[in-house]
Image (cartoon, rainbow over all chains, first blue to last red; front, side, top):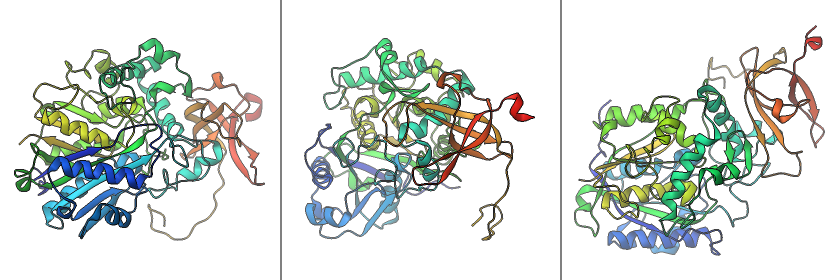
Length: 391
Length: 95
């Protein structure tokens, strides 16, 4: 397969976000308007410069309302990415493809969410699919509901327990990752976990959500807020306000029998097969080596899937993530500084798109927990991902 | 449509009702009033090779382990239907 034309020719030129809270006290539409306005200001652009919109099938903000509210004069391209959280980084593939093909010039990717104060809490135990679970494939989900397997934590716990069993992984192993994430979050003023670091003992004392794999502190934060990124051609990027961050690679790998986290039918659930396929794609088609990656932002809705993705992406061997983490490799001095904003566990859960903003800050050199001169940062959410670079 | 053979016809097949626990999770929180907690959720791999999401019954949460041999039984649902759940297979039941 040849290298897709968007690789290196498209860039993230603006990022914006609202505050992250447990009660935004305003609609998702308003939150999206605020983050998009901030992202356009960051890029030095006006709404009239935008002609493309990309979001997720589970985002509640209608494009039509967004156009009406922000005041976009004409949208020539719009799309939505399926697969729930696993689709988090897919918006970069959609936006970059649209720009590189000429279908659009400036694309805004956005996510707005009231995961805590909304009508249904994101992690709540609901017996019917909701906007947080529907639209992305619910065939397997209906086989979960009659058995009380109602939440993202419960769906992912079944994979996580198998992972622990196969590789001899313990709750403490997950806890060491969480301690690192909370340490990052503790210095990030935008994070839920700002000034709230935890110890491994704190982690082990937190109550069980799904035994033996997911304690309360292994879970991401149900968060209210919105983030947006502006994607355009690398050419246009040279004239905008911020140092451009190139989309050097992007891809998605939706495999047979996958949907959002409620699917349990792939042959070996101790392996994150979407990550394996994604890594093959990102490191195979774009001329970038795994060793070129200076930092990674990995979808950590629950801590076990962070370990599983580190292995799936090939940053360590299968079953070795627990040692990789115990050796401090996710820290700023480690081999792969990871989720330096605190991740979804420490900063907040904006569908994982907030991890893209952190990758951009790292490459601009403006992160709170700054890696020294990174050239390439990987973002991934299981089956979707991208590699961002400095020009 | 069947993704393996492309047929649009479908039918019912008798299964042995026997399998082993492929994975599990003891669910404590959050709680839905329609269930008794902790819920023992499991993936059971049937002898025929099919994997099911289900519940384990007639055992304590700390007795669950991967590889445990189990057999089907049925529990009524709130709306008058029944769902397949699994209990540990014991010697006398196998005879």
